Length: 83
Image (cartoon, rainbow, N blue to C red):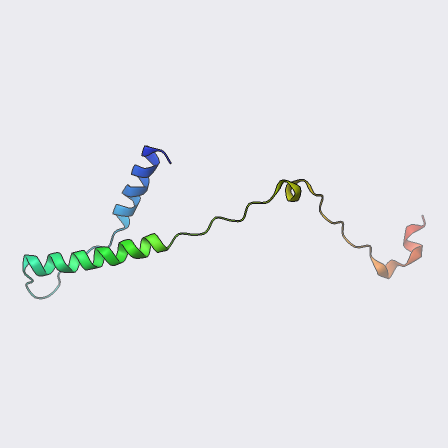
């Protein structure tokens, strides 16, 4: 991964980080810092665990193999093959 891609990914993660708003009360700086640290750690752990698995790669044999043909329609019988 290039440095630009890493920076872009980091910027995207920073933009998606949760926002903490104090709506009631008057927390001290230490209390607010503790809440932010806990929420940030939980968010970072969840974001790291939310990685999708890469799809299984197909082998060269699977890529080159022809697909199966569709079955012959049995309701036509033998007369379906004659002009």
